[in-house]
Image (tube, rainbow, N blue to C red):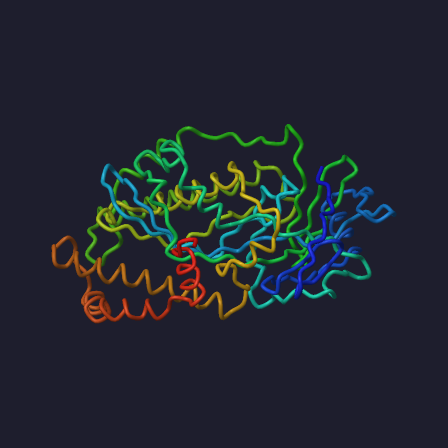
Length: 418
């Protein structure tokens, strides 16, 4: 069962003080509650959950507790040295809107991704005291305690065994670096309740029909894995199919069709496994991953990269997140002062995504030019024209697109202490 614990106050100017917490920095954005306490109880009842009384810090017992749960949405461009099919190479991974819990005091809830398509950028608003009350009920506002940037730094100390993505792909943990990373602090509205059989129940309240999660019992995991899937994976990883081309032959197109069909089946099975495993059962909705990979680039072994590797890499990051310890900070003041912490607003997100888009276009332009020069594979005249026209100018565009806060952080991080 989850329990809510009150923390000590940390007075800070320009911050909103709510229910004993110094909450929150002006950088924080909140998603308003769209479900009232009575509506939440009704929805849980329809979902088959009988809610009993749980006691918050108030003297009277309550059947349900509204909570603002802190989280980080993360955009990042990460580079690392990898080995694919025994060939060493440089890989860049673009993460868009990935998720990290901002609070680990509710340990089970910290092991669940609360990322959702319905957490729309346009609906995030600055936190105000008015948001701390929901239909005359005080909202428990939890503090930010995790540090997303230290979580990235922790990957540099992983062992070689921990860095094996699959049978043919591994990475060098000491080489993992961020070309750009930012974290958006957000507050996700939830209702926490206790069912009559003493299980914690969670209802997402940023949407009229948010997901409903119920804590699993010890014997609730029933999904059986099939070893034949692992054999199929190994074969696909070793195929080394090149990226699609207009000049692909019939055999290559059939292999690519086969790869796509297997991947779609795998994704469906992954969703079934996620529904049947984990700390919570989903009475409404479905699990979401912690990590969203928007793109991957890998140079000399690009022809050996396929969708199975992307899937494996995403699973590896998710596994690292769920099995590792998230670094925490005793004071969220220090966290919010980091210039890489940005408000979740359109201008900030657009600037970051623009930088990463240009980075990807630079890679593709140079890859096309190098491949044409070597005669590795044919490209269309339109692709060649794009590469020849933009290879030089894109470097200038990328320099101009670097956010000012990233330059500030780089300058500060390279200064030697006096």
